[in-house]
Amino acid sequence: MVQRPVSAEEDGGMSIWDHIGELRRRVVYSLIVFAAGMVGGLFGAEPLFNYLVAAAPTEHLELNAFSPWDAISLYMKFAVLISFIVAIPFTFYQLWAFVKPALGRNEQRATLRYIPGALVMFLIGLSFAYYVVFPMAYYFTERVTENMGLKQTYGLTQYFSFLFNLLIPISLLFELPLVIMFLTRIGILNPQLLRKMRRLAWFIMSVIGVTITPPDVISDLLVAVPLIILYEFSVLLSTMAYRKRLAARAAREAELDREED
Image (cartoon, rainbow, N blue to C red; front, top):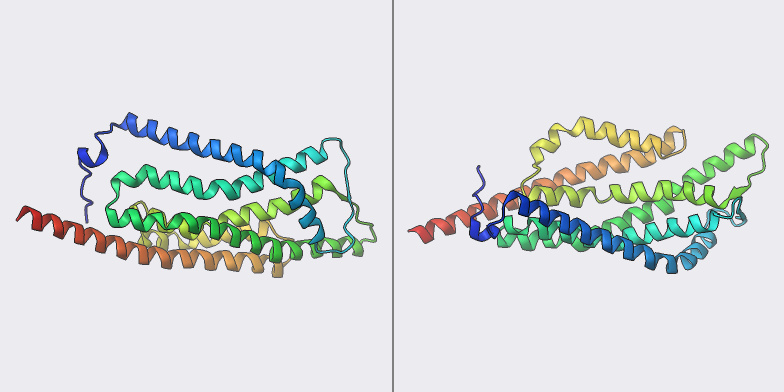
């Protein structure tokens, strides 16, 4: 079914350059919020550092600084993580505001609900990565070190780089269902396309699971399988969003037909 063209009145009479300028403005707003979140994150870095050290998988975690820049680098890593949490819902709102003129009223209300969900999904992914994936990877490395008769000495930068390299990618992947639902509601994706891409998506999820976990089959499956389930859940949500979009479009076209009569 061909989507009804957006009229000049609905679109504000914007040219392609106006759209590009509007998109650039939304991107700049998002970058400003991200930068502000980093500044605020610097103040929250120390409490977060204390919590993560206290909640480490081992009771005897001793961290060492091997460079004068280690502490500064760590502060920046914490600032980026905190800024992600702040900026993700705002960035979703800016994306929604950019495509809003092309959406019907029902679609505007429906897609606006995804914004708080973006923060919720990010926090769920963050919790899964920290409380499930990270301890699993940590214990594996500890076991290998002990089997080789070595003493583990943790560097500040190395420990938290290992932690963040797991946390941030997995947390962002948990945004997948919302992104797919949003793109379905605005007409960019549909469940048929997602089903055609299923094999490729499964392969990508498996590669991600193998890459970010220790090299053993159990660890790989514990990450890859939830990611694959997350994709299939996204396909299901996309199907629901697609049906709602078709129903909203049919209702809008029926209303236009009544107005013309």
